[in-house]
Amino acid sequence: MALLAEAKRVAAEFDFPDDVVRAIGDEFVAEMNEGLEKNATTMSQIPTYVTGVPNGTEKGLYLAVDLGGTNFRVCSIQLHGDTTFSLTQSKVPIPRELMEAKTAKELFAFLAKQIEIFLKKHHEDHFEAHVRRRQTVSTPEGYRDENIFRLGFTFSFPVHQIGINRGTLIRWTKGFNIPDAIGQDVCALLQEELDLLKLPVKVAALVNDTVGTLMARSYTSPGKTGTLLGAIFGTGTNGAYLEKLSKITKPMGGEYDSSTGEMVINTEWGSFDNGMKVLPTTVYDNILDRESVNPGIQMFEKRISGMFLGEILRIALVQVMKSPTIPLFRDDDSSHNDYNSTTTVTPSSPLYMQWAVDSSILSIAEADNSVGLRALRQEIEKCLGVSAPSIEDAQAVKDIAHAIGKRAGRLAGIAVGAIVLQTGRLKNNALASSGTDAIKTSDAGDTPIPEEDIVDIGVDGSLVEFYPNFEDYMRSSLRVMNGIGPEGEKRIRIGIAKDGSGVGAALIALVAAKMEKPSDYVNELRAKLVRVQENVDGRENPADGSTSTAAAATVPESKPVAPGTEKEPVNGESKDLQPGR
Ligand code: ADP
Ligand code: MG
Image 1 (cartoon, helix red, strand yellow):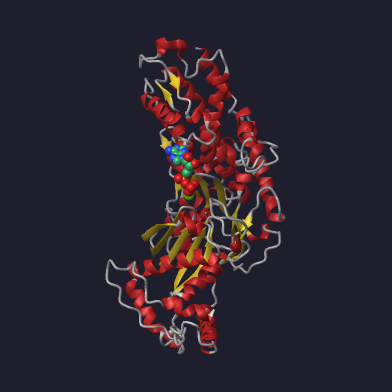
Image 2 (cartoon, rainbow, N blue to C red; image 1 turned 120 degrees about the vertical axis):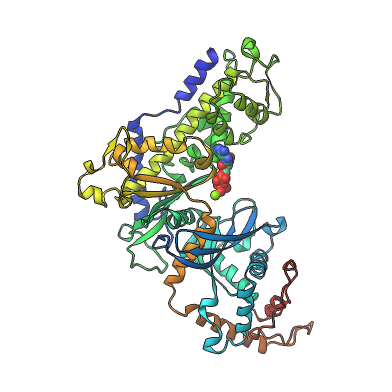
């Protein structure tokens, strides 16, 4: 019994009253506004230069690429214009040596090559037609804008965005280290390599995964109403929402289309309340933070996201194990141990290793409501290195894990609620104008809420997708927030947005393409080709003599690519172009 009482005590440390929910909500709104007014604030509130969200009627064929960490994903997305899309994709691991390449060029040339391979494999007709047309590029008809693929580039590293398709790399993370890329425009780096391969592709948009989530949900969500917020609860947590331009009063450098009066803001809410004015905390959180690589930073994220929840649980369990009077993972109470064997913790147990406990154990603990907690006990054996854990052990793990997951969900809900309040979305609708009591809910079930009164939220990430009841915990916060309440909470629709980095990036490319002035790109490209041509013509004889007459602007006939052979190197035209640069 001592163990269960102790588990209840620890679990209670993660609870916080509804008053604190409201206080966190107020602080969240305050920090959002501060971030809209000036730079270098706790929440960055980064303008994305995306000035609208799709409504599901958009059409067209777009390309999207995603450089995230381990893989490079290339896909093409056909938007059907009826909230549905088809997606073709390929994925290649990034070669280890390119993550630490000498020059950015090496990495981006590899990425461009993958795009070429993808186009040849999946869009050969488009590709061939394009190459034929390139030979008459000097005539206005020869090079038609609509034959160019617009590409959305999801680049999940910190960038300073200066336009819809411009952004400079601040620093590498996740094991990449190519110093010469820092400070360079990653879209320009990719475009340069695409041009060298003469691919009919324009890098139209630089995409953050949160913004992609917002766009993907807005396109696929039911009804014509746009989505307000895209939120990620995965390894990390972040949100992007549609803000009124008039509220973004800090200086914005790049160009954008101001006609919609709105812009998507990437909140970077993981760093909300780094000053710890309102966030609840426990001794376990403090230990986690102190031993992390970035103490005092990402304090909201450290209480919410997948990267941290397993570690909070680990630290809490270790603290309980330290107490000589509490028999956690010890056999003092062997009568409860129906495995008829002694409970032992292996010395190499993940319990003794920082970051070694994955958050998915929280989902298993939450989901296992069986009498014997068999699934959870198996997980404890497998993932915590404890042999023959008792039911009491499992119950203690379940109680503590539940408290950690519930707190994460409640905090996540406050972020959503604060954005709903900040944007005033609950006020602008038919019901508000006819009085809130127009919403009738009965015990027999809810009256359907008219589409125009719904505030749509898109979410993505393993935590929100797989942790049981995560949405319910979010909703429990929404119900107690001032200005939302149980009535407002019912009008907030939360839906999973799959494939943000594919369809979302495509949609941002579409938005970007609409902003281009007609034939911008063709003119740009012609000018570039003329420059390259001049360089090639004026060049001294190259030492190897082999490519001296390969004119950049006269494109060699492309070899037909037989199915299944698309991985063969193409006819060397990229090499031919290099001396011209
Ligand atoms: P990413 O954020 O990299 O795009 P995910 O959305 O899949 O990827 O999130 C991965 C994170 O979610 C990891 O930190 C992992 O520990 C956690 N996670 C994965 N599965 C679950 C689960 N079933 N329950 C809770 N957390 C999970
Ligand atoms: Mg993700």
